[in-house]
View 1 (cartoon, rainbow, N blue to C red):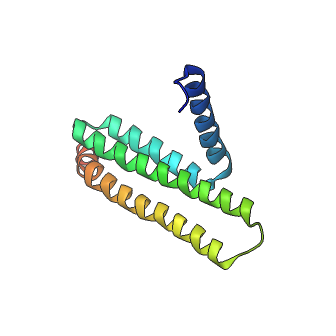
View 2: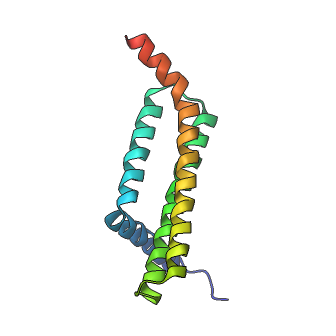
Length: 127
């Protein structure tokens, strides 16, 4: 096992940020996740939410982002290893995309449960 190196840790963060940058530049769904994350954070900031509500929202957003990152990595690796169309690789990529969809639906449900009632109260009070 190699010794701890601060330089190596910094490089690992650099690689991770480079990967996230690649995902944001190349994946249209990541743009949707970004827009929704900004909308959720903005809406939640305007409402008086508890710490536990914030934790659930953050967990939901992070889950979707992580799933999208895994999906992107699976797609990139599969395309690099087997650039020609392949039924089994297509299935693997579809399942990975399905995992993102499952998390996005769950995150949407969490967002509606947490943000829905206070947002409706806010809108009713504003009218």
